[in-house]
Image (cartoon, rainbow, N blue to C red; front, side, top):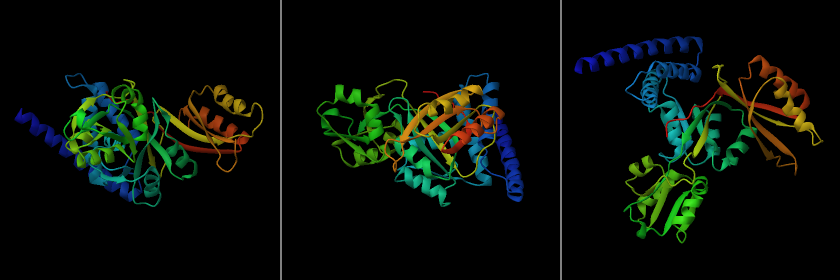
Length: 349
């Protein structure tokens, strides 16, 4: 076993030295350090070659950390997310980037976008949709005006616990969590805590912090947050639906290349006339492009008129999608491609 451990160390060190040399070449040629398409290809190849006994998810986590450590030798990315630490946004950030980054927990989604836009952060991770409660409208509204692009997505199972300092239900007079998570647990709370006061706070990490400072409070948060703040579980897996999952997007400043399994998110508006939206969407059908989601948001300055957020399968550089987008640009009052990026894969629950 010792001999194998030494062999693994030598190989990892060899990989790290090669990463440093590649980093020097990237610096000379103006290349980008974070390459999500390449990193995904590496992990998928390792999973394809995996013959056990480690699970595919364990193999993925090992290689995320190896890639993260080697990437940090080139440049340690600064990644912003809704803080404090141990929120679900933080979990998603670690799932994508590994632990060899500079984490930047911030006070709001708007602060995450602003940090990337002004250069204080290299990337940002924000929730955009939950399988139980639907879209995160704050994120959608921020996407309307930003110059940033979506460069990835993360699908994170949400398995929250109710936790307090003592772990004793009878000592709890108030339950705190982010409003989105409270909505995902609405049925459980109504059935099991019908007379307990419920309070929405800025993040689930903050909820855990508050519960750690006040024994009368219980937080709904991840088990990792509870462990970090010394909380004990009153109940686990309190989400209303067992399949509860949140989709996060990774924001950056530079588009990413095709991976072969991509998704594109776009935003457009059409004239308020009969059939115009149907005509716009038919452009994708004519080019055999699947629309996986459509969401409307009101145009704030023009009552009862709407912008449409659409997810389609494919990359904007794919010939069929490029043709459909060109046709849509001629028909739409406004069109903005928010990003093309590798399609997300769900982590093990």
